[in-house]
Figure (cartoon, rainbow, N blue to C red):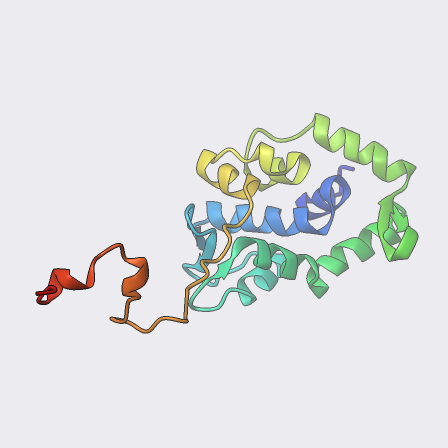
Length: 180
């Protein structure tokens, strides 16, 4: 496992989404992206990337930002993450499974165990080996461990300024002359 980098370890320990999470942690630690706790919106602060997986992630962040879950899923499906999986397959650490899913081989499982046992004390390598639970930054760890908030559903049936008096519990006489 010595020649395996964080993305290969991430793929063996958690699959394609873990690779995307590892890239996000690296970008967050380098202050290239910001992740909002309340909205789970990821925004690019700068678009400098250290590797193709980070570049793939940053390319998916529009100027207005993107929901974290969507970003991780899209990055996980990218050609750059697929290249990580292909390298592992070529090295004999994963093989095709049912419906095309890649599963670690015996050597891959042994490498995965070693990676978890030898997880670095911090940084993206720790996220690669242990997943979001291994992220040192408590705020980012909490964000990665919780689901994206559901979007607000706005009632488009009412126009601004028009209210239904029947449901307001106000009498019609409150704002005008009453009966007689």
